[in-house]
Image (cartoon, rainbow, N blue to C red):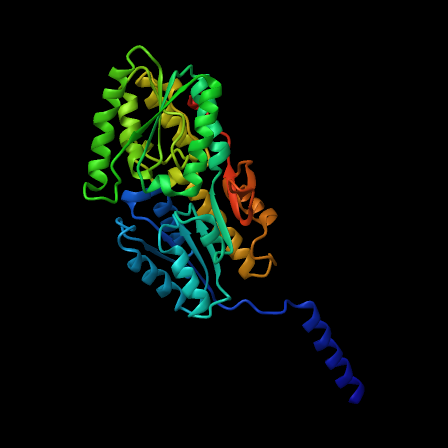
Length: 380
């Protein structure tokens, strides 16, 4: 009897060593995005994950006028964290209020167990990386080079850069603009900065879009006979810019601010998006290519095949799931993050750490870069 008891104790001890240090209890992953007017792609990506994992995924949106309503954004993020089953929060885009909310989640709610992921941050790298475990964004630096390189391939002589004061206060947007300026000069392309209305201002998104629709024809008249490429820093203005460029024979559109076949194109090209399109992106790009061909614009538009904001949400969800289940030990593991992004997108990408103008490297801030596409390659 004593021998049997000792064997039982030994078996229990062996099993306790072999098993994980913790058993995964029911958990939730909260995802905050903008509304469909600010960024439909990320909204739909979160919606799809909730549909697939209704017992795990929680979703909410920040206000359209987020710059003026940061308290609302903060309150919603704190509401996520007040649920003890929430073990990860993914915010795309991480607009104003993200840093304050994440700080309160850590310091006031004492939720060190929550993995905090910020995508496409609006706040400066030093602030957001001080509280988030992972920050992801478009590789603005190399993205700036990609914009100019594409414009150069098309023979563009002028590059119009639309933005406004609030965006030109973002460190990463300024860094991209500086690269565009340098690369454009080397390529012999004239860079022209045009001030556009801030969509969060009194005129709202409609006013900002109307400005673009009216200004593009003016630019084309001003530079009559020249090939002109256009770039805009704001998500909600992409649809208007694409629609305006589509109508002008010598106008070109090298890249959306958040590169994706779903960023502005569904509305500007008159293509609705169904749930199946998010699962068959190549087929959707092929439909867009047909519309561009019909409008003699096939060689005047480009984007990324991997939708960046959707990729950040899906990659963040994959990473968070593995972290919660003990498959990833580090909270900010760049190697595992790249694996997660490659797995959900099926595309190769470059992942690098953000480095500011002073040479400081932010190890939690990961910049993502995919290759841009030629729509002609997708014609059937």
